Every structure is written in C-alpha cells, then in structure tokens.
Amino acid sequence: MADTELAETIVSQEMLPGRSSSERLVPAVRRLLEARGWRLGELAAIVVVHGPGSFTGVRVGLSAAKGLSEASGVPLVAVSRLALLAACVSDAATVYAVLDAGRGEFYLGEYAGRRCVREALLSGEDLVAAVAAGVVVACEAKVAEALVALKPRIVGEPAAGDALPIALERIAAGEFDDVGLVDANYLRRTDLEIFAKGKVGAGRV
Image (tube, rainbow, N blue to C red; front, side, top):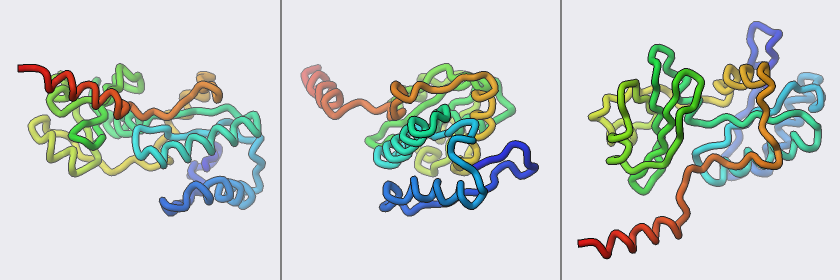
C-alpha cells in the first residue's frame, strides 16, 4: 500500500506463500488497511500487475483486485509486468523487455518511454528479428543466457511497489481500466493453436 503524501510512499506490504495466496490475499489486504486505519473506499485506486506470468498467480491477483474494485467502487489500474521491467531502463528511447514464457518462447514488450508499442509472445528466432535499435532488458538468467547475442541488460525482478510511478501517471490522467472488461495479460497461445501450428508445419517439405 502507498501514500503519496509521505516521503516513504510504500507504507505497507506483505509477501504471501505461493500455494496459499488465493486464500490469504484478501484477508491480508484487509489487515494492512486496518493497520493504517484506512477504509477500502478511501483509496484513490486499486493497482494490479495482470501479467504476463504464472497463470495461477495472475488469475488470483486480478480476480481479487477486480472484486475489491467492484465492491468498493474504487477504480482499477492494471499494469503489465513487461511495463514494469521496461521501466527499469531510463536511458534509452526504446526498451525491449523480455520474460521467459516456457516452451522455448518469450514474452516481448516494446516500449518507448511509458508508451507500449506492442507486446507479443515470440519464439527466440522471431524475437531476435523483432529487436531493432534499443536496449534489451531481462530479469531472468534463463533469458539472459538464451539471448546473449542481444547483450541484454540484467536487472532485478520488479516488485509490486515498482508499479506505483506508472499507476500514478494513469490516475492523474484518469486512465482507469473497465473492471468488467480487463483480463489477464497472458499473451499465451492456446494449446489448440500450438497443436494446429505443429500439424501445419509437419506437412511441409
């Protein structure tokens, strides 16, 4: 939780065990609010990082954020994990944020400042072809090893608090997400699409 009127804006936070986060998340939010003497409806916004990432983690976090937003009438701001990673680099006009997607694929976010140019799920070959002038940034050793030819800049894994600067810009501009329409940012093809692509490829000579 954050209070922009204080010098230390992040006033409280809590790490939850992965296996029990679905049961503990909302009670943890309630406990942190009570510790500050705040009411949910007094917040300026509820901010959630909605992926790409773990299917379960993204679903749990987004569902809780949407439920809290709907119950309280507090607007929702959904932030891409790729945007957080791109924001770690401030000395380049174009930043390519890359995360491991498994199956030999990568999540790529191309950002010009805070503006998202595009986000996509790409193979390693397609990713290399997509990167032009700019800085490639990664926070995972697996990505750094796979894309060593692109000389990625390695940074720490972005934390939830790193979403605050992006969220504050969105709040100031009145750019909130529609709770009924916002969805998880999986950037993942379905197994059916992957299977269909494999069948097409198998028929080529």
